[in-house]
Amino acid sequence: MRARPLTLIQDDLVDYDTAMERMTDLVGQRQRDERPDTLWLLSHPSVYTVGRRTPITHLPDPTRGIPVVETGRGGQLTYHGPGQLVGYLIVKLHEDEGIVDYVREVELRLVEALGKLGLPAERRDTPPGSELLTGVWTAETGRKIISIGMRQSRGVTSHGFALNVDGDLTPWNWAVACGMPDVDMTSLQRELGSATMDEVRAAVSAAFEAA
Image (cartoon, rainbow, N blue to C red; front, side):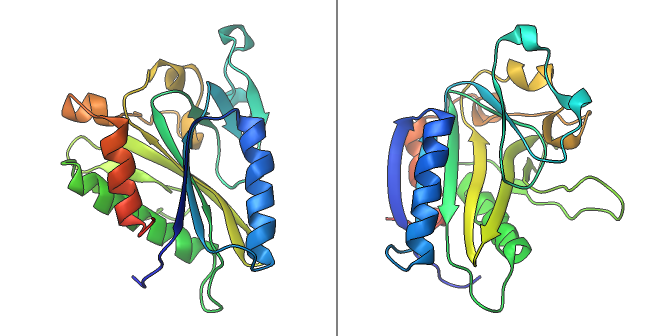
C-alpha cells in the first residue's frame, strides 16, 4: 500500500445536505489543485441515503420518520446517525489506479484501524453475480461494521465510509442495508462492549496518515 498522507478536517454533527454541499466544494478545490488530499471526519443526524440502483422495496416505512436522501455515490442503502463516524475522502488518484483500487485500499486501512482498537476485521471479495461486498466485516462474528460507497469525478474521489461506533443500530433493521436483506449490522459497542468516538477518530486518522 503506497504512502498517501491526508489533511484532516474534523467536525461533530453536520446535516447531510450541508455536508454534501461542502464536500462538493472540497472536491472542486482538489480538482483544481487548490487543496491537498483530505479526510473529513464527522457524523450526521439520522438519515438514510440511497444510491441510484437502490430498489424501492429496500426503503424504510415512511412512518419511521427518518428522511431518505438520494446520493451520487456508489452502493445501496446506508443509514447514518449519531454514534457513527463518517469519513469523506477527497483524494486525487494516481494515473495507474481507479476508484475500485482505492476502495480496496480504504477497506484495508479501516481493517488496520479496527485491529488497533482490538477488533479483528476483514474485507471480502465479491463472488460472481452477487451484490458487491464492499465494506468491512468482523472476523469472528461475521457482522458488517463499516459501509463504503464512493465515486470519482475528474480523477478525484468523493463520499467514503461509515463506521458504527456506539449509536443505535435499530434503524438498520427498518430497511434493507447495502442491498443485502440478511446482513447483520454491528458496532464497536456491540462487539467490544465499549467504544469511545475519540479513540475511534484517532485510530482512523492514524490508519489514513491523516493530520
